[in-house]
Length: 428
Image (cartoon, rainbow, N blue to C red; front, side, top):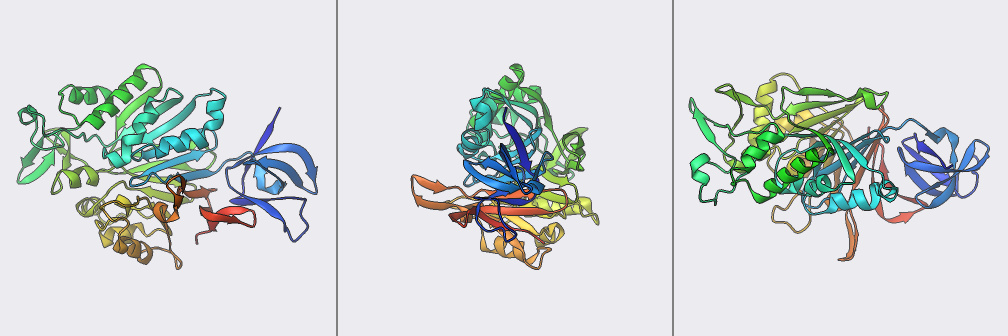
C-alpha cells in the first residue's frame, strides 16, 4: 500500500542524493500542501520520495500530515477564477472565468488522480461574485460535470435579462429586472434567493441565455443529489465558520454586497447603469486563515466602493494581507478603498488582446503605492503567462500557501533552473 505525506513547510527541496550540511544538489522544489509518495528508504533524517514524477530525498522535518491553506489564482484569461483548498477536506471555487480554462485545470491537472479512480470530487463551496460571463461561464460546465458534487453555491442574487425580448417591457424596466425610485433614489428590486426563485425568473422567458444555462445546471445538480444548497448572501450574512475543516481558525466574512430594504423586500442601490450595478454588488469575501487574511472583491467599482465605505463608516473590515485586484486591474477604483485594504500583495487576473487594456497603469501603480509593505508585491496572471506559440502556452497561475502564520507566493518560471520551476516570494 502506498504511503503519502504532505509537505508542511512553506517550501521544501528534494535532492538527488542524501545531502550534506550544504544541501547542494537539489532536484525539485515543492510548495506546502504538495503530496509526496514515500518510497520506503530513509537515511540521516531524510526520506526518499516521489513527487510530480521526480524522485528525491526530502528532510523529514518538511513533511507530515497537517495541511495548510492553498490558493490557486488560476489564469482564466480575461476573467476571475480561484481555487482554495485545505488538504483533502475543503475545496472552494470563487468564480470560474469564461471559456474552459478553469475546468481544464481541474480536470486535466488538479483532480486527474480522482477522476482516474472514478472518485467524485466534492467542492464544499462555489462563490459566484456576480453574473458576468467572465466570472461564471466556466462554472456551468463544472456544475454539469457528474464527476463533481457540491455543498453550497453562494451568489449575490442579481439576474440579467434580455432587453430585446418583445415582452420585456411588460415586467421589467432595466436589464437587471425592475428598477424603482424611492424618495428620489433608485433601487433594483428584482432579486432571487433560492433555486425556486431563479426558476421563476427563468420561466419568464426573458433571462439572458447564459444565465438560463446556469439555472438549468444548478437545478439539474440539485435534482441529481449533487448539490446541497443554493443561497443569496449579503453583508448581513457576515461570518461563515469553517473551523471543522482544519485546526487553524478558518472563516469567511461576507462584507458585501450591502443591501437595502424597500417595501420589506431586499433591494440594491442602483449605481449609474446596469453594468455598474451588477459589478458593484459583487459578493465581497474576506477569507481568514489563522493570523492571515485574503480579500476577493469581484468587480467592485468607484460608486460601490464609496457605498461600502459609507456603510462601514469608521470600521475597516477590508484590511488584508493579500487582495485579488477588483475588476482585473481597471481604473474604476477609489484611493480611499485601496488605502483601507492596504495589502502586502495584490493579484491581478486579466487577459491578452482585449479592448479593456487591463491591467491599467494606475491600478498597478496604486496597488504598489498603497501596500502595507516596504517591498510591495503585484502579481499578474497575464504577465506570468508565457506564450511560445499558439500551441505552447504556459498559463500564468499565481500560487499562495499559508500555514496560518506565514505565507509564500509563487509563479512558474518560464525556464526552470537549478531544480526549481518556481519564482518564490516570502512577503513581509
